[in-house]
Length: 206
Image 1 (cartoon, rainbow, N blue to C red):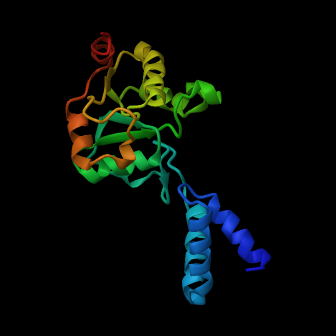
Image 2: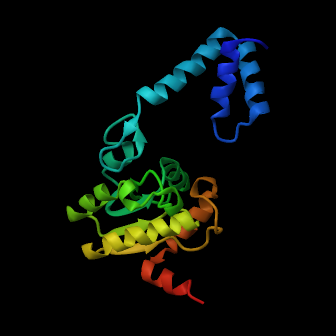
Image 3: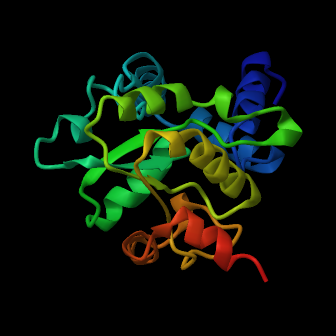
């Protein structure tokens, strides 16, 4: 189809994760054939997610309200903070329904090859949050990957002087996997069987 607008749509769709050239073309033709109201609804939903959401000023998850619903919930245990790499990981924990503490979203992971260290994440905000004195335990719930482990240990070094309990998820999650795609039960088990980070370090040594 010789249309600049159609080509622009395909190129935009190809920028989405997991969408290759053929998938982008199929989606573009679907949008082209769809009723105008359906296409406009999609466009408005995309616009709304970019204009109506922002980061929670307390935990940095993406939300439409500040503070977010979890941070506002008075029934949550404010002494425990679960540190995750992405807002998607918060949703993964909430699916299980068994964690009742708070969260802190880093918005990334330590990746030396990409030039990203813990200072590029929301680590400073996490440290300031803990210094206020209410937090007693930080659960480092980064993904069980090389980058996730590097992030956990970098954060642990930063947090140890604050004299709080620092724990890591149990290794029930498959190495190299992501929290986002893990079963709710597996996440809940890894959470309940979490260990002090020092113990996790020693157990990894042959």
